[in-house]
Structure formats: structure tokens, C-alpha cells
Length: 268
Figure 1 (tube, one colour):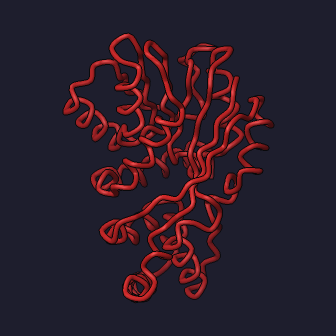
Figure 2 (spheres, rainbow, N blue to C red):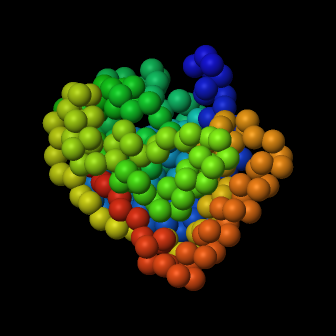
Figure 3 (cartoon, one colour):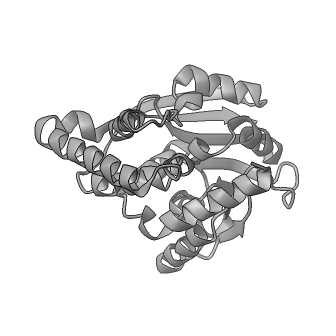
């Protein structure tokens, strides 16, 4: 698959997820917590890479006020359309949305931003390519902050991969590359940043979030692998997976709905 093919595939996947992405209430809390920990101040220039439906961009724009500027970049036109709706509904006028690959942004000069944020997006991007480009874009004295799931989380995703194995698919954990504080520290250092604070927390899903679990996995990082199954295999896989989640909701709900996450920060 060429780079163009990969980019087109990612765009298609996220266009398909755009309509329901913000229905996952934890996405909102997750993005807002990243911005809270980054603590942007009035007047900052901020890049929200892989902005999706604009959750972190909106929180950042509120933090930097009318003298600040936020640029949200995403490969998905569908996601950006949803972001524009949310931005307009919030009455914010300082957010620019750009359709582009967040790992290659030649339209912005070196040192264009005081803060670069990426909420959850590095699960779907080549980590070093992304961090390297964001290092170029960060002004001296600036800060980068990103969030990631800890390796092995969420539990529902681990269960999805376990079930996939029974149907002949060997799926990797997309959180592996950044799934520990040590790996986050190393990735930041290797990209030229000075690693700073790394905050480990837990996030709680709702049972309603699990209603979208199948869609999130099959339209997310494992989309291409699922497409290799027959319709009958997919139906059997979905039935087995959703039944397992339903059983755990009855018997071990706290384990199922609690996930470990990492918020990692570095300096330029």
C-alpha cells in the first residue's frame, strides 16, 4: 500500500466514524483533560493535530481567549464538518480548520505554534513521523502534549482482539508504541523534545459508550483487517463479542469500564 493509499483509507475510515464520534462521552472528557493539563494561556498559537470533531481545539480556544489562535488539522472531511458545527455552536471564532495529513504540514513554517496538542490521535499515526513534524512546528520554549491509552487498554479493546484471534485475525494493540510512560518519554526524546511531565490517570467509560464499541473497533485501527472476513464471519464475531461485553457488564462492570491513560508532555 502506498502512502497515498494509506491516507485515503484513513480518510474513509474516519469519515465513516464522524457522525457518532462525539457520542462517546469519554472522548470529550479525555480531550478536555489534556488541555487542562497543558494549561494554555491567553494569546497562544495552538495546533490541534488530528483534531477529529474538534474537542481539544474547542477547549483550547476557550483557554487562550480572543487573542489566541487555534488550528485544527485532520485528514477527514467528515470529522472536520462535525468540528465546524460544534465550533459554530460554541460561538468560537478563533479556530481555523485545515484538511491535511497531520504528519506533513508544509503550509506552516518552522516555529509556528506555542503549543501542539494531539488527543488520542497518535493511535492512528506513525509516531516518529508525527512527532518529528510537530517538533519542527513548535516555537522555542513551546510545549507538546498528547494523550494515549496505556498498553492493554481499554479492556473492551483487548477483548475485541482476543475474539479476533479466534476468527483468524492477529491484531496488534495500537497503544503499544506509546503505552507506557517509559515509551512516551523515549518517543519524545527521539523526536528532539525534552520530555517533561507524564501523568497517568484512569478514565471511566459509561455503559452507553460500549454500545459503540463494535463500530469503534471495526471502523478504527482494525478496519482493514476486519474487511478480510466474510459476512458470515463478521456476524459471528460481532455476536460473540457483544455477548461477552454484555456478560461482563453484569459480572465485572468496574473492570470493563475503567481504563488507564497517559498524558505526556515535552518541551521544544
